[in-house]
Image (tube, rainbow, N blue to C red; front, top):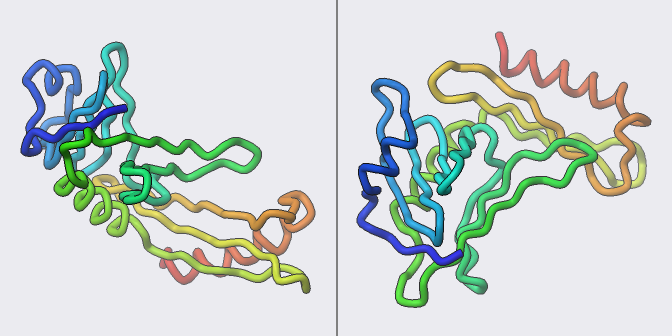
Length: 173
């Protein structure tokens, strides 16, 4: 996908398709081939000709600029046993990095993180990372677990549940 920037503004027809909630507004925008990327206080929206995808900031595991490949990369939080959704948006050759949108991505994703804790499981150095993320706007806390390759979630479930319970007491009073 080719991406070009228009000073953070999207055309009215794109904004109309977005149908934002009252009070929500676009803070940064970028145009890619056949899609618009729009960031608000609550989410990243990918607006394609026939659909609008909403990715809440708490659902973004990480976002960044891959300078070697000239790509804006947005990776969502995964679910065990399923491929993690990763979106890649390429810039037009005359463009530099997607400044305002990338800054918003990083700020909003960082703001959603309440806890990230590494927990070793077993004697072989493998473990899990616990993530607590707060959804902007409604305050819901989502808990996610990232398993090291080689760990079977069914086998380590009791240890992970105990680690999650301990982490919850640290985050949720």
